[in-house]
Image (cartoon, rainbow, N blue to C red; front, side):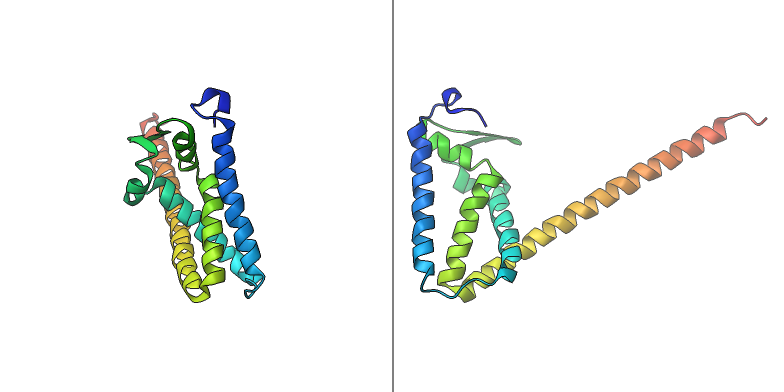
Length: 165
């Protein structure tokens, strides 16, 4: 990420984003005092759900309508649009780690204020993250098997081409 001096933003633009996040976090913390605590066991599925939601927002084609006001997308390339706050929001929406913090805030808020709905949304998004992990693992295994098969074929061809002694 470029320093503020190299972007069409001001420090106050990032301060505004931090203020909104901090205010929402403080509001959630204050309202949590009267709510049932989230069990520690729920942190792993919440983490997976935040990962999945942030990837969905930052990368999935289905969510391009959400990014469109802030991000110029050309192929696999994404760059923030505009100036000042619009540009800063665009930077936020191109970063899965950054969006992950906002996703976690939203999911924990939903879990605290509508526990049943929060558990359902978390389960769907966590299962999606599990699917992503399994798909990535399967792709890696297939690529590894294909590389090994190609290497075995090259070795077989090379040994067949050698003259007998």
